[in-house]
Image 1 (cartoon, rainbow, N blue to C red):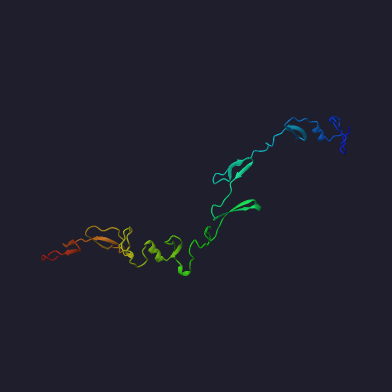
Image 2: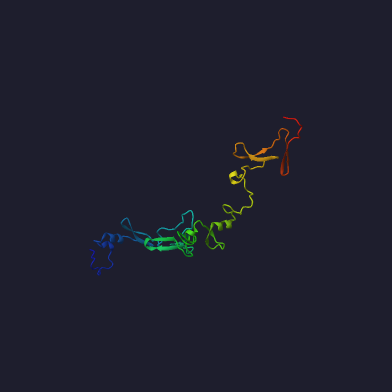
Length: 243
């Protein structure tokens, strides 16, 4: 019996083997006898009977945060086939997080500005007060006494703030307790950093280059006597002899 694809209404209970001119793919299927739980599958270009995997096939996917620091975006949570990730959130108004959909990116940026809640940069007035012109040249910047802003201080104000003495002639310095280097003669000192021995007087050296302590020695019977606040030099009593 020839296979007629145009009209098969008159065919009933026809044995498959009695059919002729059947296309090869259909002929393959007709020759199969699949068991319960099996379905038709094509393997290597040939239809065969195979077990139904009930949709359990495919890859079992998961995700892992592989960085060595920071916070991972994967929440280590999988519900069925759903991998769950954390949202990226701005911790404050100083940072912005934007979905850049056209580029498939998440843009994270710092909000730079001159208002509260933004990060100061460049010539932001929050760094310091405005210079105020040439009249403020040489001023020092400090935190205000209230601790809420910056303010300019003149050199004199800064010395008062830190308790420093003024330059040049002044009455600020009343004593020196930590000076370890002797003042030179040109600075008003002696250039010496220790007192001399007992009964010595201060004088210029023979080279006229520095101060030194000297000992007064009496000769020809001259007697030198040191006492509080004075040095007595006495000649010996006359004996009437000529020398």
